[in-house]
View (cartoon, rainbow, N blue to C red):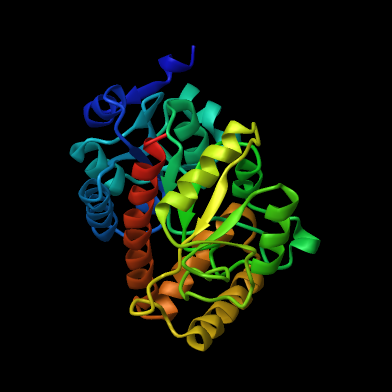
Length: 304
């Protein structure tokens, strides 16, 4: 029954038939995370980095009632240019497929689709998390619940720094999700490599991550893992500079009554504006860095 909804690109199908490593990529970063043409150019560059490091990229999106596992160059261009693309999380998948709408997969939806396709490693920029003020609003990303139940490892630069990083870590701990610092002992803060929040787990190579994932899933410990890979120092923004801008963006969002799923796109757009584009450059750099590490983990995990 599931196969009627899955549509594999020729490249991904061949790789999976041959038992080669495949890395999932989300599509909200194309439709909602970056402007055209940087979105399409970055998507192509990230896919190429994954290929150069021994794995096959599978960008995931919803098109014409199908979950596309891997996009053609033409589909990537169309998706990056299209207007009114729906942002798809767990609650939206069935509706968007049934109504044959264009849907961009969030972290949560990409995890679900990757799991259905048998892909275990997923590369993104940053995960969602607990929003600041969530003790009153209950605004918590569906990404966190998905990480607690879906067997896909997410390579990211931590949670987006517009969030409450401490509460996000607490929530992940409650859900039993391992958060592993890749070459670091503290949680990265997306635009900056350090947040001040220590992590109990650290790995310094892809083999360690692959071994942990195999043991986790062999034991039937359901759920994913966060592989927190810091943005390189050379691409990072100054912590005081970006934190001040985030505070200004949060104040503006509150003043304008912006809530729920509209919050993150508004804040990221405002941060980009206030940093005069520097945040977008950092975002692109960290995604490319994650792609390199994610491909290495996929190659190591594939040996099992």
